[in-house]
Length: 142
Ligand code: HEC
Image 1 (cartoon, rainbow, N blue to C red):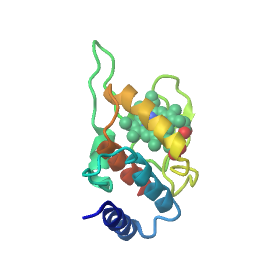
Image 2 (cartoon, rainbow, N blue to C red):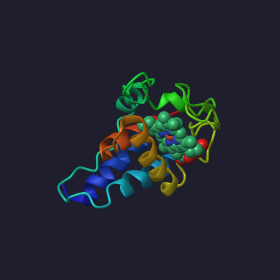
Image 3 (cartoon, helix red, strand yellow):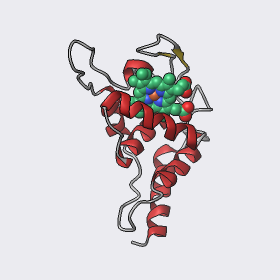
């Protein structure tokens, strides 16, 4: 499949799966495309898998010593329509769910910046493009 037809297939499948999710669908599409800038020509522009993203969201990453394990839900909680609380600073974090907070996933640069920081803090490494796509598909469906 050519890159272009692969992109349009992905877009089609995201539209189908997320019909009704509102404007944020378009942010997700832009992200799916931008995440793959620099991908090798043969690399699939895989659309994210929301179920995989949901599982990864609560996966606990053990820390050295007696420090508590970390997960995305450590700060954002498990119900993304509710406010979160920063695990270190205790500061309030506005809901991540685009359904209640339409500004979410609308700014590619912000999303990229926070995925970079949060993956490193939580997993101790950067997330792969496929992990990022899964997280975004999950968040976008909330
Ligand atoms: C240590 C606390 C913390 C953890 C753990 C954390 N985040 Fe965040 N996250 C934040 C903060 C702080 C922001 C930026 C403030 C804001 O946008 O409300 C943020 C913002 C984001 C954003 C930007 C959303 C947008 O469009 O505005 C995404 C996406 C995100 N986090 C995903 C994740 C994922 C995925 C994980 C797990 C790998 C994770 N976060 C773990 C604290 C955390």
